[in-house]
Length: 270
Image (cartoon, rainbow, N blue to C red; front, side, top):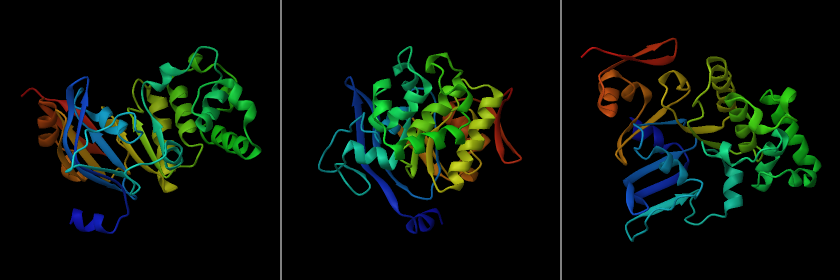
């Protein structure tokens, strides 16, 4: 049933026999997967399992080992210009927050989505059309009151919203988010879930990593489990987010429950 459903979806990524080494260490092994428009994909797995490396394949900061038997295509192309890629996919990675120097204003961080550089001098070169896009994003992500503040003075939730706004300047159809809910308080977590659900309702597809089951987006319709650099399983949330499968994934005795559309993970005594 799952394969029949995907036959009707348009593919935007094709990975076949993909292996990734970093500093001579094999991080991903034999990755075979296709991703499609119309899917909101959750990546789950223990720390060190290769989840972030998997996502970095899509922004081309990590490259697979190529062979005659491997394929890596984005938008049906084996080679894609990085600027064309940014117009199709928006990215959020954990290390981005550390790359912003002290003194850089929030507005300049968002506008850097057009230049790729966290530097205020590019903000004065923006076209009127680009300025309008940025102002719309500032309103949508509720950043008006802090837009002239220094980025590094902001809370984790404010930084996260700003960087997602930055990822949206080209109005991409796909967002790749590496642990967007990490270190957020309850209110910031809730606001981010609400805003991401609004994007999904506008036909933006999201592929994301989270360690917090309570942060799983209710609109998630595909789950990929990664363990020790391999895809352990691939299916719907209803197939894979349960006590038995997640206990095996994390090598931990847990109980998984779902309540009002959200999941929770509880420890057990077994």
